[in-house]
Length: 338
Ligand code: SF4
Image (tube, rainbow, N blue to C red):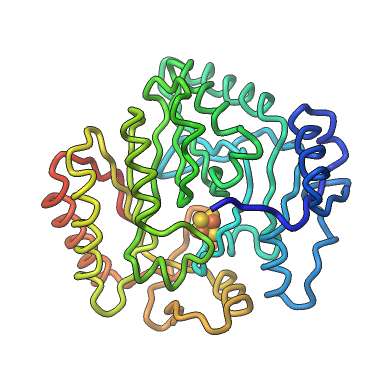
């Protein structure tokens, strides 16, 4: 599924970089609407009279900018630091965590100064040496969707392939992995595919590849020798969830039961007040259960509160996922359950 933006907005400074210039020529020649802005953080030209229109137009807009904040955020529990290569993605998942973080600024941003970003990563690695530093490439985006345009993920994988004291990891629902398979990774980059039950994917994960397509891509990645993982998120405990997730584990084990070093990450569904308000504006008919009464309110690491499943239900989900992962993947490591 190739993502073709409806409009591409360039920060003027981005054209000073080879990738910025290349993208400008490419989209101009393709006939895609292009324009300029002074900052990728202040884009005001995306049309849309309602929040929903603004969201959908934003998701069809690519902003090409220069990443100026080169201090990396921490990234618990999956890594030490975020590696900011892109922001947002063309997917339109109704539960997306970016509906909290980005609010109305859901437009896709790519940063052309990848070499500067990697130079900063090198400083972080040097400072923590001989400890190994882990970087997460998907904290504020799905970085694979725009890879055909930028090639940045390939460059990043190659960079980490040469770093003895660092590891790179990212999560994706996208499947255009072919250009990455031959990159010399030296086992330092872990691909994790975000998967869920077929019902959840159909209902909530709009504009993303199907489960089958994701598993085909995961197979290619495993064959190329990359460390591989699956992230099941969000785990949604609606009627019949036990059977639906068991079916998912069965499907995964048929293709990946013997992959060495496989990892799992499990994240239960949660939402913030801000996300709920945004979701209801953008997807007024959503079937996501956002009933605050049925949840427990907790403060998260970023200082805002979120509604999580009550303790009893969380315990039940945790136990069920523990049983299923042991049964279908006795050799795999469960990194965390939240
Ligand atoms: Fe959000 Fe990931 Fe879905 Fe993109 S693919 S909309 S980043 S949840």
